[in-house]
Image 1 (cartoon, rainbow over the protein chains, first blue to last red):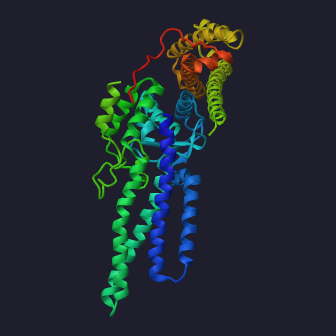
Image 2: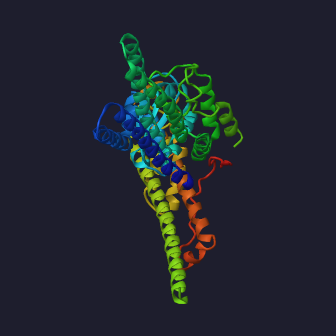
Image 3: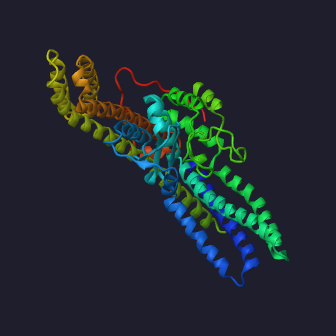
Length: 295
Length: 182
């Protein structure tokens, strides 16, 4: 357990290093092509540091806003709040803030940078479709993510990957835009070169993003959270039954995106989609159920 | 390097190790104390909720008033005496509450009462919190006891009088422990 915590802290630092290298390379290339001097590199450095600080200190708020989660108090949801409070006691950590995500899909995630700043979010569907034991199983799984500091790596990956995806989308647009311009105008040599450079940069970017997400989600981590969650509730069947219901659930979760998918207890994407394999983040549900049933 | 420096280095390492072991024992012992106060908080919460429940139920129930007097009687034992006796009172209250809620099943008006529903949710929430706090307490005691008995920490534990702690046993149907493999 404690080695898991230090691995997570180390991986968080790796994420920052990769992010900085990436921004550095992009800034260097853009600077080489468009600017003289070091102005752009300095600007890029400031942007990168700002984003890093934001993702470290407010990453949880960013993620919660992205999924449109709303904070709830005891008088609104006494059942959920009591469940979370109970499991926080069992895990020996402070009660996290509690959020509800709109949507009928059964899903949940936890975020924050350590147990003191943690939040836990469940969908409306989770509350309406799961019974008490199943809900406890899901909450206990998230509680284990909080206790193990998984949330720190996962949130950092979400925000930093989100920024990179956003950047590459801008590059992709300018590539298409630049390509059109290049065809329409005479002597678009410079544009062509930029196009190629951007294209190459995109090629490099994709695997790096995938690697960052791999840092954030390891199958081992999910299995570990399942197991330590079961240790909290002393009832592995609860989570196993919840996963069975999740398996049979075909609702879509509109607020989930590639950047946040790996946070959830199970993949929020039910339909096949583009780049699914690259971003395939969750261990097989059947396998998880089998492991829980054998405890 | 002279022999003296080598001896000093070894001595330094040993002292550092002793400090680390001592501190880890302190951390574990404090965790047990915190776990106990967590149980305490929940017992107090239950103690505070019961009069409200009695007041709400009284207005509806006609014949089975004895379950309420039983509950009130047990409640008075909850906040006095040794931890042992309070733990026992807590178990008795769990049973007394069960009979109250069983009686409430016969009164649809009571079951529909918002206040009653809220109290029922709160009390069952508190009950599972007591169970979880007890579980955390016992887990902490287990970690601590292992450390106190295991070599080489047992030497430090002996010198500084860290003694084994008692588990908080629950009567009857404790949730079964499970076998988890990582």
